[in-house]
Image (cartoon, rainbow, N blue to C red):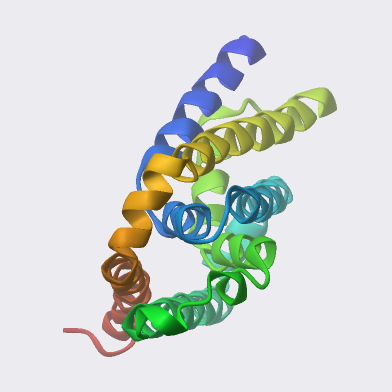
Length: 210
């Protein structure tokens, strides 16, 4: 199989996955529109780093090991669920504060770390990439190919989430966000809490059934 064609397949799979709104999109939106363009781009840097880490771990077979070791995989998912709920609650609390007490700078204390942890808190990424590699990547692909995959994912993650950050940090977007900031913080927080609880419920069903 032509390796360039395989790269194209991986590119399409990744960008479609990135475009589906999820925790990463929520984090970039929150920091870009509520705090600043710089904070949004720092969150993007954390997401890009986390994505690269998961891809490289998947290449090393960590996704397979996680699936085979049910306890480790469930522990990681539980930790991820807890982190998403924690971040969501922080956003909800920020949205419930009076306007006079809103302090965007404090919310952006570490946007890069928030982006990184949000990405790493989703161990399904490793399983997804492992599955993709098994299905698409030919056996014994040359070393340069794996390096190209990492660079591709880094470039596409940076480009897509940077577009989101730049679009939502414009004066128009920030003006409307600040007008509805409290409600939007609550919505963003509710989404994050919902995603965390959904993951926790999946674990509950695995352990105890319906």
